[in-house]
Length: 504
Image (cartoon, one colour):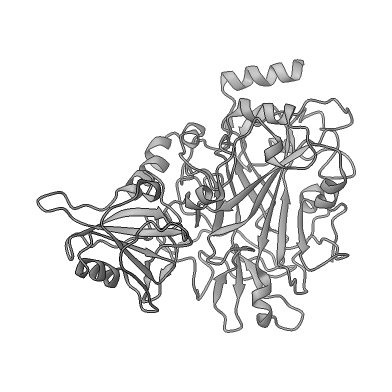
């Protein structure tokens, strides 16, 4: 077993260097897409994506900047951050996604992005923001052994079960009662020439010296950027009965049961000027965004409501017979040979979070709105049942003479005659409705303080479901027609900017 040379978080706690951390209370989607490595097509394995709603099979900086929400709290940041999904392999051979800590329905919580002011040998060295269109990858999905270099040391795990348990560079083979934290530290030295390269790594370097997360930049990578670091907290403790002796039951979506191949992707969607100001001016060492006045924040609820429909027509949750894609489970020492996966899976909306009742019952889906247990959005008749379906709630409200039906928290049904604007669905926001109905697991019945809202169609009027999913798809594809391919050279504006940095 190999150990990291320096605990990243311990360094943060004891360092006077400034940093700020961006929590991501929600995820925008879990799907088999990777617009950095395989733009425009189905990716090799499933990722969990946080950040702006501009995420799509093909992306541009301009498309990211018009996102109307993010699952991460900082409003000026529409970047996307993603890592491979962790699965548990049950003793019966099936697989299921491991939820993140604090996430009762595998929807929220568990991911944080750190922005660290890690300077080199010069205390006053200027750190730079990522330019428009910048992207990079840290980690290697094909490895199954420890490389003992900076890139290998930048992948680590922390067992959240108490003090004096050292971090490891592989997934630990002991149960972690508080959950498992996976960590990836990105290189911070840029060549000043490329926004991306074919391997998505060669334009970047880790600092030179003893540590992968600190030190001066090498001569060929002279521009020192702010350092970014992801941590993802998985609720592994709930699967303690699936261990086989000392062998843990966990495997990443790319088939890796060692953890050495954990990796992260980053596409910059920041307002670059604001990020530069935050790097220059936010000098507090607490990490709290609240102490960085340059930045403003979404609420946790707004982050949880920022979701997209899955854009790969494939089931990636529940009990699965195999990992999505062509990803057999592999262990330490196995050689992983990249292969073309011809599994027939294509791009396409997997499912929506509503059903079409416009022709059968003449009710339309309005969208996913909010609710408040202390001030209910719908105050008419209601019930809670363990066999709730959307149809049963709509029929109940219709029979009671009401024109609105709302479903919440799997099995609750509420009726009303009007929609309070405070709780109405927001245009273009998919909302936090993700819980499966107690009476039909193929249907969605709201969520935590989130209500799936249906409305009786008006007489002699149009009867149509909310087109929010069409809008989401248009935003994530049509707005982003220009692919940032690999490699992409710097624009004239960025080349000029890079020369100015080097000349300073």
